[in-house]
Image (cartoon, rainbow, N blue to C red; front, side, top):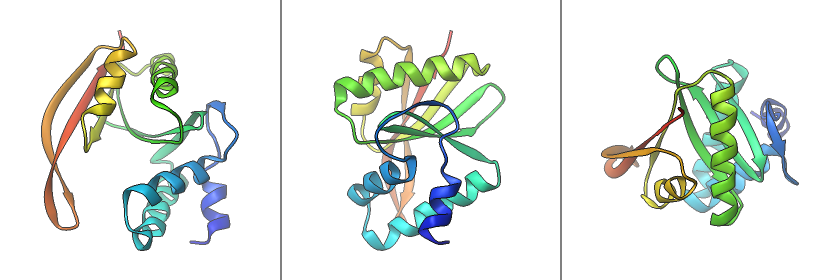
Length: 151
């Protein structure tokens, strides 16, 4: 998939956009998290999922929540950001308000470190964290599952 196609697929669906296109934010974030050779594969996977209407990007500022319907009433997100922690707290609050307005009761996310969950707690949102594992590079890696209740 060409870069142009990925950009078209990643049009902002909701929220308040920042100064950067969602695909740029996502790519920049991924470049910090994985080898460059894997970034394009990840971007293609995301764009395909969006084109198939299985997920959508929700952007607030320069933070993108890649959102997928989980279980009934549940929204599973992966967070891509270029913002400082203080601003990221505000973005989580905005995402929670958006998800609640769409009828979701819970947001879930799998994290490789617990710092993001601590930020969500700082935002005043009810957070439950459990330990889990994810498969990275054919190895089981410790991770955290975060659940945010939307009352």
